[in-house]
Image (cartoon, rainbow, N blue to C red; front, side, top):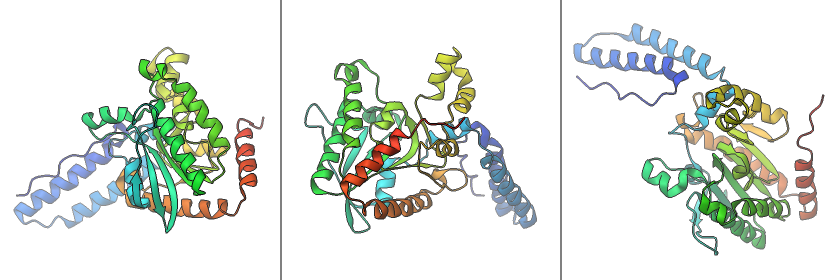
Length: 323
């Protein structure tokens, strides 16, 4: 008899789905050993599984989307770089202090055309997370990103950025080396960069840590990512004096993709497979590819002065909410 499939990681709201998956796996394993025909029972369970998946993932709350954005199997920047680009050549260091591995970037080809791609990178295990600083950039990460953007500007090629950070690293060393100044310089310089910039929020988009590489002509967000001035836990700790109120804070922050489009903070949503990008990274990357292709084609028609004027107007227009 073959061993039952190992249970996959499940978020709390995903447990009804995992329970049905385990029943299907157990039924298949037992039927193989006994030579029984359980096709009807399997069909019934598979129908129930599909219905349950659609019910669960079709009615996600903002907090549940935050949890999916943090899913340990969710694709990270380097995963998407591999799926979207060819001939990626990673470049290291900020030429001032060190190489911050929470930020990755370099030159690449996108459908035959050169680009500079920059992403925030988390780790898959404790060792890699320590090396990547849990995806929280130090000032050197932002200075490296800016160095690469300036390189793109020098050669007249577009910049693509992938946002996935809980926020910039708030440690003593980071503060001593002026992380707020590094982010502020990026905001200023990106607003004046004379080449197209396209951003995808692929997971967590936390505060200035995210915005430091996202002052862009087009900002898109994956369906189950979030983009916010503060994390739900941080907001709950400040406003409600208890991080347990994070679900309530997530609702109030309107940090999920549909609300961000309504508020004009992002330009569009990239659809994910049912259950999240981790269920089929290639399908997610394909949707990103189409969006990126269309955006670069559109932005590539604009002369630099018009590009900068439109970028300025885009960000000046945020925060205006109809009464």
